[in-house]
Length: 143
Image: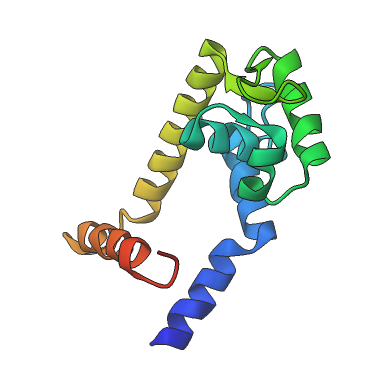
């Protein structure tokens, strides 16, 4: 059973799988919101304001990669930079109201995509899967 779960997780966590999903979710969201900038938006929504350096490990990039993506999002009005309260050399990346609305739309699209993919499952199976997945994340090898 452990091997089957590991194989499924490997497929889910593959970069190409994530990029394909992000490309689908961001379609029509504007030039700045795409599979490249999605992880930065999503991470900022999860963690709140962070510096590019602090955000880098969460999105699997280096600081300069986060900065390039944040610049695109800033030019589109989705992210702003604020002075870091304890490090004068750094800036915090903060979602704007428009950025928060974009994230809300992306989350709605993701939830709809997941719901649609589970529509053919037997009644109750999707609910049990959600409970089990939460338990696995909380108590499993990633906790």
